[in-house]
Length: 115
Image 1 (cartoon, rainbow, N blue to C red):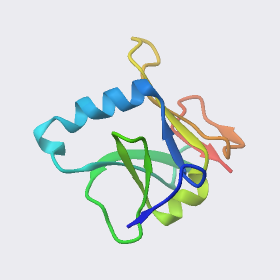
Image 2: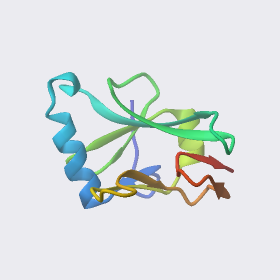
Image 3: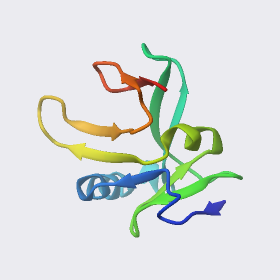
C-alpha cells in the first residue's frame, strides 16, 4: 500500500464527512476496514462513483484525513485527483457527495460523471 502526501492525495474529506465515516466505522460489519472510494464504468454519464468499507489491497493509495483513512485503487486515482468528499444530513439531497474537479459533466443524481 502506498502512503501519499497531501499534495498528491486523490481524496480529501470535509469535517462532516470525517465524522460520518467514523460513526460508520464503529459498526460491527465495518470493524478493521477502511473507506474505499472508487470509480467504475457505468451510470448515465459513463463513469460512476462507489464507496464501501473494505480491507486494504496491494497497490492501494491511502488518503483522507489524520483520523480517517481512505483507500483508492490506482485506476480510480486517475479520475479522483483533487476530489473532496462531503456529507450532509439534510432530509432532501443528504448523504455523501463527491466534488470532483475532473468531472466535465455530472448527472442530476451526482453519482455518475464524464471526464
